[in-house]
Image (cartoon, rainbow over all chains, first blue to last red):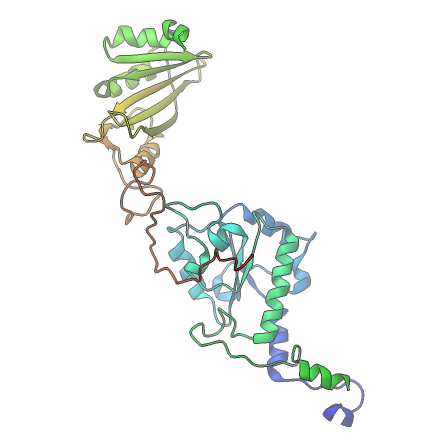
Length: 185
Length: 175
């Protein structure tokens, strides 16, 4: 098919976006913002039993300037919210955010004077993980979901390179039905 | 309860002898005594409980408060003391009215009480007189009101950063 037929075996064609996104999705450097008991479950997911390094997300960076995936693990209080916002703003673009567990996603069962009712009230969030705490499988599922999102949309996800910019819908080879049909022919 | 009321514990008896009229009520449960004492006498009573040979409360275990919103006086400050050498405990309660919401600090007797009194002030707004640094300890300084008072609105939040608008979450559509 296409120009590949002109070369010998071992060549393939793709787009720059696709290759860059592919490398992005398998080199997620996480910043674990751990504030509560969900941290235990994050550790379980990060260690060798469940092993998020299989998805290229194994190195926790404890400086936001070296990270591109922010894991918000646990309850965020109103006192902590400015810190979270600062951490998010320190991260270089492109960057993504995962809300880990019920408290980070919605405030959980803390509907009171001190707890932010979901971190999306403070920073944009790409993927939410349900559970109190979530199982490690749910974490892996969220990472795979995020990887698909990165592959499809590149840095222009919800919290991507320019959060103010409207999301551009660029059909990518991976999911475009027409391309799939073409490749089968 | 009434039988327990009649039975008077050793520490309670000691306090009644030393501070006549200061003990307003008392009871004991499974060997642990509770006394309700006069607000003005709290500092000498604590000093006595710490220093007397028959009491020897070396350890301040806890200090907290209770908001009885329908009663008067409204607040009750609760102290827990323990004697490590004599192996007994006592719970001391003091009623504090809302309009004159202050009580003597006991930080000179036990240094550990410092942060407990700050927390109590933070959550209930009870002023501890002569405290060296009576500031909020858990909440931020911009916070208004006292969150554990029963008349603090249960849904009231005081964000420090601007809250982003989000879509309504609890819409599950047509089920």
